[in-house]
Image (cartoon, rainbow, N blue to C red; front, side, top):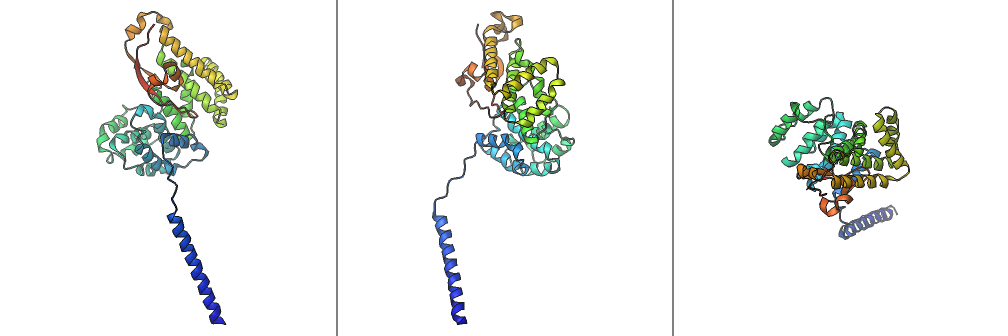
Amino acid sequence: MRAVLSFLVVLVLALSAGTAGAQRKATLQQPQPPPQQLTAQTILKWINSYREKPEPNKLPEAVKAMSGIGVFKELEQAGVYQGFIAGVIAANPEIAEKLISEMYPLPPEDQVVIIRAIAYSGLRGWKELLQKFVERMPTRKVLIEHHLYGKGPTFETLDLKASPANIDIMWGHYFGSGSFKGIDRIITVLPWSKDRNDVEKLTLGSMAKWTLAQNLQTDPRLLAYVKRQLDSVPKETAKELREVITAAETYETAAIRKQAVAAVEELRRKGPENVRNASWWGQAGQTALAFGCVVASALGQAQVGIPCVIGGALSNVALKYMTPTE
């Protein structure tokens, strides 16, 4: 009897193993769904929702993916990525060196992003951290020295008027770190949205206003912080900030966009208020003007020449040479 039971147990085990093996074989033979294609849009989506579930250990692979799909090829359009990498590094000083080490290898042309991310992180010892990677980036020695010896900008000294990408860097830093340092700087340029004598300021101020309103709609923590700033910012800034808050809370951000587009279009047609004559544009010649998504409809999408994306508070920007006519 025991022999029969033993035989039955062995038989059941053998049949189970055979069934499991057949199932595994069938599974392997079934066509597997293709992996999700990684695009700039999917990466932006991850960045935009990062604060809900921070995963700093995924940053190195994300950076390699960004490099692989070419988002660093045009640095003027990669501000949000640079800022995000800097923000994650800033929020995780205890593992910053490890995170950066795991980003390698990267093509020499993309190593610029790592250098800037370290400099823009705002870490107290960012120069010492950057020095640890000098040997890994021999072709970037000049740029590294530029930052180490005080000639390169830091997060605090970035000139927001110099490029729309710098506003994107502020947003990226916020997404990666949760710090309001970049938000404070964005708030300071809101009055530029009323400037009728400087097209760069008008454009950048409008972009700051639009992206802030868009993001306040979906970020209660940010909305609460911005409201607290109303009593501490200059009167002119507070006025613009109230408009942004109202637009966000009433979901009427389209009005901000329309006002910005109309203002930029008027300035293009008539010139600055303080030099409103037909010769102004001729004197200016062909000027490199930085236009963001906020003015895409004024210029025409074909003229901008790049996909115009605003997701939450993200903006792709381009430099466009043009001479407006009277």
